[in-house]
Each structure stands twice: as C-alpha cells, then as structure tokens.
Amino acid sequence: MRQVNLRVYQDRQEAVRAVLEEHDLDYVALHDEGDEDEDPGTLFLFPLPSQAVTDVFHDLTDAGVSEDAYTVLANASHAETPRYDEIQEEYSTRVRGLSRRELHSKVLELSWPPITYYVGTVLSALIATAGLLLDSPALIIGAMVVAPQVSSALTTTAGVYHADWEMFVRSAKRQFTGLTGAVVGATVFAWLAQSTGLIPTTMAVGSLEPMGVRLAPTALSSLAALGAGAVGAFGYTTDQSMSLVGVMIAAAIVPAAAAGGIAIAWGSWLVAAGALLLLTANVLAVNVGAIATLFLMGYRPVWFDRTDLRASLPSELRASVAVVALLFVVSAVVTGALVGTHIGYQRGTNEAVDETLAEPAFDDLRLKAVRSQYGGWAGTSPNVSVSVIRTTDERYPSLSGTLQRRIERRTDREVQVTVKYAGTRQESATAGAADGEYLPDRGSALGIDASRQRRASPGSPSSPLVSG
Image 1 (cartoon, rainbow, N blue to C red):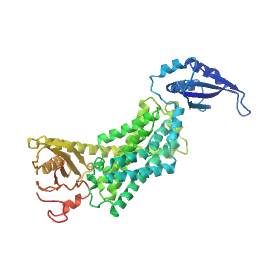
Image 2 (tube, helix red, strand yellow):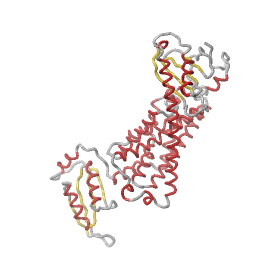
Image 3 (cartoon, rainbow, N blue to C red):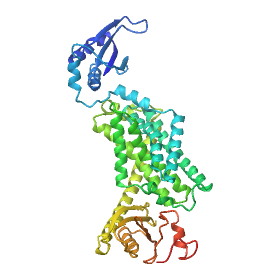
Image 4 (spheres, rainbow, N blue to C red):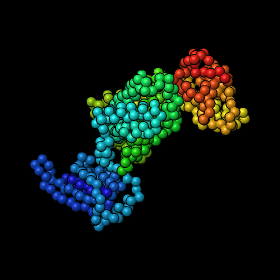
C-alpha cells in the first residue's frame, strides 16, 4: 500500500475532494496559508492500495491537478480507516500498474552512473569471456548477474515514453559505447589468454558448447531477446523486482559480446561476424520488445495524445534524437535482412539433415543438434556441425559427404560438414573432400582451423585430416 501526500492550490481543492470521494477514499485535509512566493493550499493525506495508484492519479490529472504538484508516495505497512478494507478488496485481484510519476522515479533508480555502468559492462564481458573459454556455465551466469544492461535498455524505452529525450539519447549512447567496450575488452582478454599460453592457440573455440549456441542469430534467439525486452517492460511498469529481469536481458547480450571478442582474438572472422550480428539483433530485439509491450499494456507516450512528436522535442536535442532514431531504423532494417537470410540458410540446412537421417541406412542414428556458422553471405563456406547419437558400433563413412552435398544443393553454399558421434568417433567432410575421410575425435574444427584443413595434405604431421 501507499501513503499519499498531495498538495494542491485552493482552486483545485474541491476537484480533488470529488475524486477521492468517488473512489471511496478516506483522507485528511490540512490547510496552509502559503508564503509570500506561494498561494494558500491544501495538503491531502490518504492511504491507497498499490493497485489503485494509477486509476486515482489518472482521475486527479483529469480533474486538473498538475503533474508537477507536490506529491509524495511512501510505502506503508498498515492502514485503519472506515473504508480502506473495502477498496483494498476491490483492487486485490488486479495487476499492480505503476503510475507515470512512479515510473519516472523507478527508471531514475535503475540508471547507473556512467563510470559504474561502463566498468560493470566491461567486467561482466570479461567474466563471460572466461566462462566461454573455460566452458563454465557458472561463470557465464555470474556475468549475467553483475551486468548492468537492464539500466540502459529500459531507460531508452522510458525516454520515449516520458518524452525525456535527453534520457533517450544518453541511454542509446550508453548502449553503443558500453557494448563496444565489452567487445574490445573481451578481444583483449582472449588475446592475452592465448598469447600467454593460458589457452592453447590451437583450441577450436567454436567447438565449445557455450560458443556453439552463439555462432549466429536464429529465429529462437531473436524471439528470446524480444521476450527479455517484454519481461523488462512488464517489470518496469509493475511492482516486480528488476533483479531477475536484468539477468534475462543480460543473457541475451553479454555472452554474445564475449563470443564476438573471442572469435576476433582467434582470427575466426566468420564466427565473429555471426556473433556480433547476434549481439546487434538481440540489442535491437530487447528495445523493440520493451517498447511494444508498453503499447500493448495500454501505456502511451506523453506526447501521443496531447501534441505532435516534433513539438515535444527540445530544439537543442532534435538533431541528436533524429540521428539516434535513423541509426536505429537503419540498423533494424539491415540486421533484419541479414538475420532473415541466415534463417533461410539454416532452414535449408536443417531440412537437408532431416532428409538424410530419415533414410533407412541411418535408422540407428538419432539427431542431437545441428549448429552452423553464419551462412547469410553468398560466397562464404560456413562450417556445419551435426551431432548424432548412435545405438550401435556401426561406422557411417559416407554420412558426412552425403550431408555436405545435400546441404550445398539446398542452400547454394559451399559448406564444411563435421559429424560428431556422442561418446565415439567423429567423421568430417570439408569442401572437396572425398567420402570416407574422417577426423579422429579431437574436437570440432568450427571456424578456427578451417583454412588449414583445406591446405594441409592428408597424412602430414601438421594435417588434422586422417585418411579413412
């Protein structure tokens, strides 16, 4: 519940009384004489169920009470008034929606100081980088917990809603600068780990389980990011705790930034392109999900009904807002096109795998996972990793070659296929390899040593290919 202190000038006193009586609220009115700089007024004090705050203040605004009026909303634990129990019961089943005043206060509380935000973003990316390199889910989750991404993601949305365009521009800059710093920090950290021998330089980082799910954006990853933004907006407009919401938003952003930095440090440019595209797509999806959810929940920007958008923009901020909005639109269009192309390629890859494993010759195999590097650009040769579970010890030397040919026909891409058998050996077919060549179980070659595989001669000491 809330204890409300509201001071209005005497000309609005009767209008406020009428609203409070209409809602059956018990109140105390204290009159003051004001001072030489202020007219006489009345201070209304009344308890209010949390769920009723939005309705009551909406009616007070319609009654002519200014949004700048002296207002204090304090948490209270108990109230004894003649009619409070009745109104509390009336609102007990409603979802608690915050009023505009409370929303603005909440988003200001969410905002991190600039230095703290940037340092927190970079540190969370470094922790996530260590977690990815060590294949440690615990460290990755820890990075999500300490990441401050909920601050900038929701303050951008709040800036649009409250027509606080300075907040909007500032938050957009923080997102871009913070995530750029996160990628650079992850790159430097991974390069140092590699150059100092903490991580083997020959390690195929694309084969690591946490990296494998961040090789490129997918339809499901985009939907998850939209969901994170939606949950963030719901938490922002209600009394729900923002701690877990912040973890969900960070989960869509921080590991992708770390994966991009690792791929850059290892010189795997196709993996880096996919990871950074995933990062961009998720950031945009979080913001779009938050803004769309506010509209679906019935919230409208302050400029939506009262005036036009241009009139709500301060003259000194119009250029900055226009640049940020243009960059957002262009990024959304370009990213959407690139993600859509990859999703089409991914669908063709999955169909080719399903068609192959449905043949009677492979009845003993069960598909576990299909992972691919970004395949949205023509002329690239993405690696495709197909993990299967087999119930017998039978070998399938032709499987990798068959998958390669069918994927290339369906996607019009030259691909490199790696087949992994759970707990047994691994077969591999690279572009141009003959059927029957295979890789011993030394880890996937997703993106890191693909060029060396194509150049090395089978059987040489440095070659990872072993003739079947």
